[in-house]
Image (cartoon, rainbow, N blue to C red; front, side, top):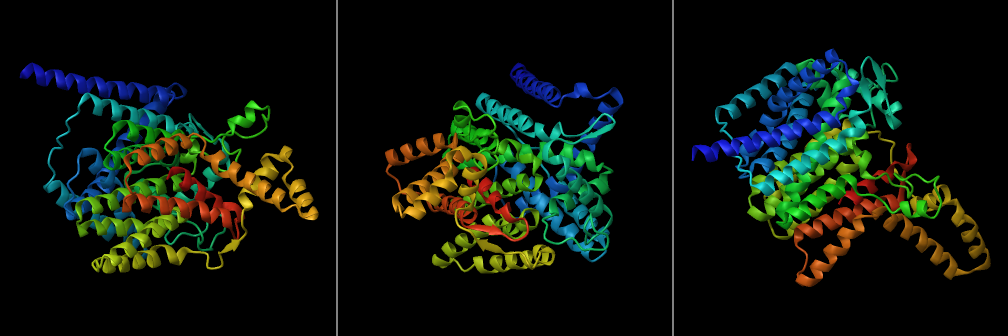
Length: 499
């Protein structure tokens, strides 16, 4: 028995050692001198403590409150997500009242209550579990590389790609939120910041204040691996709950992180000037962490779906608490993700009311209160959607595939009254935009459709909810542009590809 336990511990140490070795390689530590490397390790140590006390334990408090029975990785994922939301809401409330210290004290009391009842986690790894989670860690680290290799290197600030301008805005916003709330616009002194979802940077700022972490480290070195790991673990546990199939769950993690469009076909035909990342008009997920608000909204979307699935499975109204928390607060983290989640929440509520489950009404009121207290005060009241059908497919053909001659064909067919030609041309634009961007995900759709037909089962209510949210995330960008940043509605398509 002693030898068996010793062998198990050695196996775990081998896995941990391998993960650290891969981490060191992927983080590119060769670029750092010894003093910088030591500083980075200290930052990670401080950040792990910050996440444990300010995010994980408050989130575990919510799991304890709803009496959730979860295995270790489900509990880790949901505790971190719920903790980010609870920490943000608490500090937001008391920062607004200019007594932030009370919010910090409340988080401290919550930590004390959770630690008092904290039990040592019993994690039993089978070989297949060890492989699955090692694969998730590896994929998550690779996924985080675009941000880990963009930012502070040695004694210089190196910003790559969109971080040349977006990264500077993020850093300025974190700094503003460290010292001022409500925040002023970083570019216009004295002007209140409106029309921007800033809560992720608010969380970064408060963690930075409490644990003395630099803005650059928070933005480029600390949050990317955390969000990436939560993305990977969240997708895996959601899909494993839903499918009970480890292989399908790992493929889900892979495709949501590294799935790509079919734009490579254009390359094979000699059109080398087209972007492999956004050639068909939609950015693919490999660079998602460069847009941190989008990445965290994907984590919230996954937690929302997992919480709804747990409710359907266990039929416990306690799950309404985290569902309402996610639906009410996501818009101020990422407005587009918030719209998709709120849409899903409305369908969820309507179904519960159809079943005459009136317990959902007070939680729905809670979502309304959260939305109008956290998000509404910072909205740009003049922002609105403008009906502009099929602008996205048209832009793809005009800007990225000019050799197709879309405008000339439409003009000629319209002048000549060739309706069939107009219909075929528009159908081609839709086909390229939708199926071209789906790309490798068509493999999943094909296999999923085949197995569903073979099982001869109607889709569950949960599956219909997922499909409805996916449908909304493609219909909106196909039909509408927005005022101000006109073509930003294309970001809804990112959620469509994920779902």
